[in-house]
Length: 206
Image: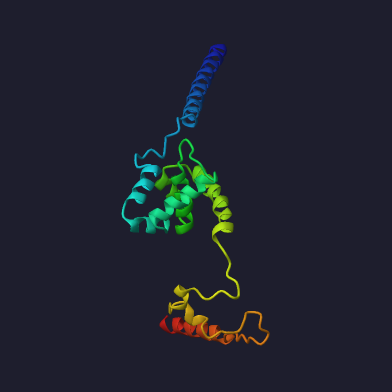
């Protein structure tokens, strides 16, 4: 009897072990299937970056101002200058117009990369690459188009006749290096007084 009981217990244990191995094998297979799923494409919109940039450049002028901070003709001229000087060129999936648009949109709005990915339908790596790729060519143009004024240059009429700019400088006839030029710092206590008043008002309201 003892031998039969021992044999039955061994058979039962063997059955439980077999079931356990089957369950573990099934769980491991499920995990492997989860980790080997085919990646789902993300940027699949038909309204690609090329289409969007083309619409902005050929639409209302204000759209280009709002989006790229310049007139469409200036955008095209800047792109052509960069291309003629061989500073940028078309790539298989990103045109020169898109490259310049990425740079201007990033600099003009400071938007997150995710928003730019949605606009241009490219990955964050592609967006980052081309924004940085255009920075250096733009910087090289400063030697051609940016000229610092000299001390003998007159104030530009647009500044001289604009009340938003010129009043801040019209009464200062002294040269910047004049040792007699007196600069009066603002009252350092003004900020402290304002902070005290705000704190008092908050305390009273509470």
